[in-house]
Amino acid sequence: MKKIRFTTSRLLRMAAILALVGLAFMVWSLLDPRPIPIMAAMSIGQGIGMLSFAIFLVVVVVDAWRASKRQPPPDEDGE
Image (cartoon, rainbow, N blue to C red):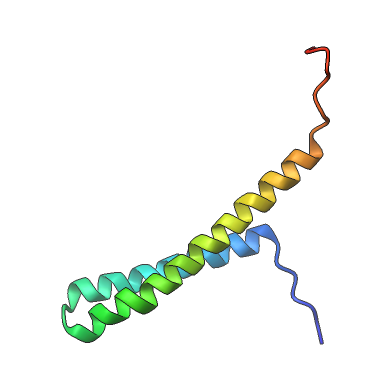
């Protein structure tokens, strides 16, 4: 079985696509204000949007962690 490697750019792309799908559910409920589209937007759309935001936060934290590891520690002399 082949391992799937999730790079930060792939995760960021996945988060953007999920955000657009969640937004599509929200727009659907605005254009068709019946109970089913509204409930789908409130449950499925919000869940997809929250998953997208969580993936985005993971990418930000990982990127910040990697950047802090690359930088040398500051001098104690203040120079």
